[in-house]
Length: 147
Ligand SMILES: [Zn+2]
Ligand SMILES: [Zn+2]
Image (cartoon, rainbow, N blue to C red; front, side, top):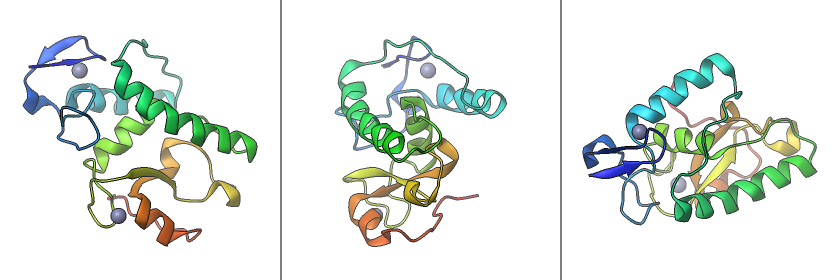
């Protein structure tokens, strides 16, 4: 059983996605929560402010990247702030793999329309790529997400 910090329930491991990002190999939040979060997001467009006591290690790890992304976006004057929930649901969609080569290592957030070209710093405009694919893509606009 694993604890989901969003719904505060202990659930069987099969209720989580498998990922190499976390130390235990499972997604931080359970599938239900991520799906529910997604549907709430669709209605409120980012107005959700969930409680904040999810597990610290994961949060710290992700937050470092998130802060860097948000800082960069702010410096470029881009619209939007990404939250850990935006990231988690994008990772969930990508099945915790690079959308281009399916690598599970060194995943990062790619802005589909680059911030430098006026892209928004929002969930609609991010996809999960590994560092290698991200750098080979450079400033080209290519959407690898499934629709
Ligand atoms: Zn949950
Ligand atoms: Zn890749």
